[in-house]
Image (tube, rainbow, N blue to C red; front, side):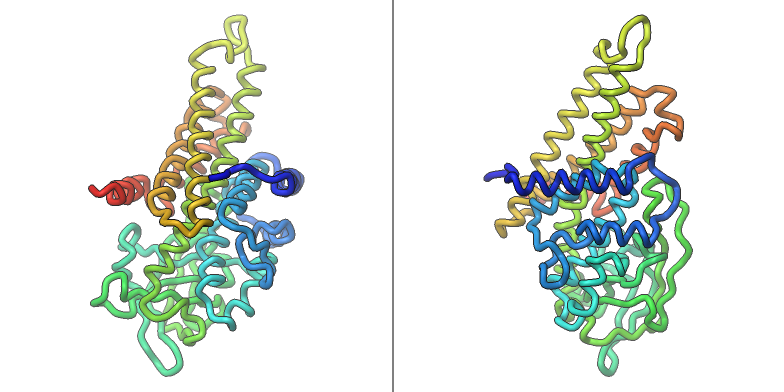
Amino acid sequence: MDFSWSTQQRAAQSAVLEAVREAFDGRPGTDFFTRGQWRTLGDLGLLGLCVPTEYGGQGLGALETAGMVEAFGRGCADTGLVFAASAHLFACTVPIADFGTDTVRTKLLPGLCSGDLVAGNAMTEAEAGSDVSRLAVTAERTDGGWLLSGEKSFVSNGPVADVYVTYATTDPWAGHLGVTGFVVERDTPGVTASEPFDKLGLLACPAGTVTFDRCFVPDEQVLGGEGMGGAIFQHSMGWERACLFAGYLGLMDRLIERCVEHARSRRQFGHRIGDFQAVAHRVVEMKLRLDSARLLLHRACWQMDQGEDSVLSVALSKLAVSEGALASAVDAVQIFGGRGYRRDQGIEAYLRDTVPSTIFSGTSDIQRLLIAKELGL
């Protein structure tokens, strides 16, 4: 098991880090990402990291992809943008690349990789968050395709997306085997996207509802085949829970850098605050969480690349990264004190951006249930 990076891989990560810093560094904003920013991400290759090169991607494996996403997360202060791009790639582009028809792949993947298209993952519903086997959105068989009906909630990138990867019940009596995945373009009659939600964090990523009103989807835009939606969704979640959260490793690294700099320059009682154990020990815990989470994430990605069963490792990784990022963001606010509470310092934004990490892609409690199941409990 080798997690070391080659000279070429390190150079690629450094290049992404510097390019992202130049394009997006600064304090987290409160506005949604722009199409110009999105195309810049495409130019940097960040929207197609693990997509085959024949469709405009870089053809990287999970471990290399994670390394690039971590560099992206460290270099970009706007975690909402990192999340939007990662959700686009892992929850939408990956299932299209791995399960889409040749027609759909040829038509959509180049634009999804270049930044000409934005994708939204439409799975969550008002009554179906963790339990994705009970979807109220249905797909009814019709001549040449399907008619989708119902509403999806909390679709990341939904209000601005050009393409949706969505899932619907096609056989209500078959549980997760009765779910089918679809690729739906924004301009399809019957598709309506709401205005963006007003959210706590990840502000650059717009999220809202998407409604399908007897929306016709041709057979060629079915992912995999009828009844494969549950398996396809779990496949995409493996990529998301592992590689998307590499962006949070970058965030944790950035937080440590900010806290060390502050602890060395801020003085109280005639000393640098870093001289006080209460502060120094917090920074040490932040470093411990980061390195521990990174090792778990790298192991999960390595197992994915080897084709091994990675369910346990991915769940452990997701749990460690999300809980660690949230704890470190709280510590950072404490280290910065009153300044950490002020928006102009940018520290409180990291706290707002880490809270949802313990909720999306399967809550921390869901990860614990998966881990317990894998342990035989």
